[in-house]
Image (cartoon, rainbow, N blue to C red; front, side, top):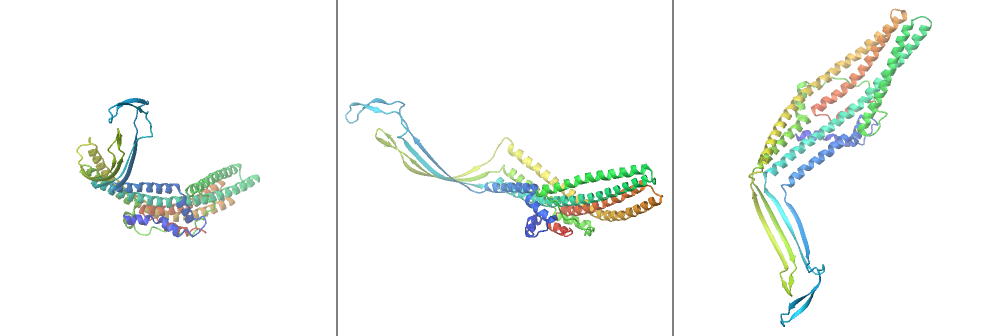
Length: 463
């Protein structure tokens, strides 16, 4: 399991090794910026580090605690008001009048002391299992952080190619708009000399208006795609490298069974679910151990200094003293109102929930890997078919335009043929970008997606 984490956490390491390489606004450069500026990843990393402190806190319950304390006090006493009191002189036996001053803070008795204490848990199985549970939870959190890093690669790639997708669609829409405008102008000229009816002009005008409207919508879609990419890196990327026309479209390397085996060994989702199950099992042991006795050792050493009390000229008490104590205590929980048993039952249910979560994760992984595998291979077939449809649509448009010139076809048929061509062009562009994203999703589901995949994909961009 730890090998999975080590492989998945390599994103920062790999990117730092290539940090001196500058490609401009290409996919890898934007990924580097996203690693430093993406709020989602930064939040996930901070959350992981905060949760990691639970391990340290759980370990602290097994370690000794050492403290130092001190105290000081001052005691004063006296009457509220000054007065003369009658006293008998012990030497002469005579009664004398003695002045008794009112209470003052100046004369008094000062006491002070300090000491050290040491406490150590000797036997406490609940604390030990709590530490084991915290460690398993920390490993699950590390896997989830690695999954967030892989998700960042997917989000960057999806946002990057959404921009390229929107650019290609906009270019196609602009070409369609220009072709519709030329067709409208030609139809208007032919209508003016009486070669076509006014209805042909209306049809050409409607086609142009529709193409113009589509261009406006696609311009807004392109701006939205740029903003989505900017939201990840915090920087604008007005000019990114496009995908080369010779980008290879290939079927998935290997059969489905091999990919399923690979996913089972590398899936971050399964690793996280397994660590969560370990954590709940350790927590259950801790809750069962709450019923067991605990043994604690406590040691103290103190030094006290007290001032003597003077009464009628005689000093009473006072001086310095030391004290030490060493205590070994045994605590046997007998009855806590049912809270201990309730926590144990809750821990048992949490184990069952974690077991079912792991089972569900494995089933979903099988489903996701099969769907992703089929999508990539389907994309390959679709792209080949889309490419053929462009050739067919272009041939149909050429034949229809020729037929319109000799009078065997009308403007409506020409407009429909042109619409088919540009639809085929848009569908072909969509299919290429779908293939790229689906290929990355397949690797993400398998748990093998790394920055190296981005580097290899980056080589097919026009620098």
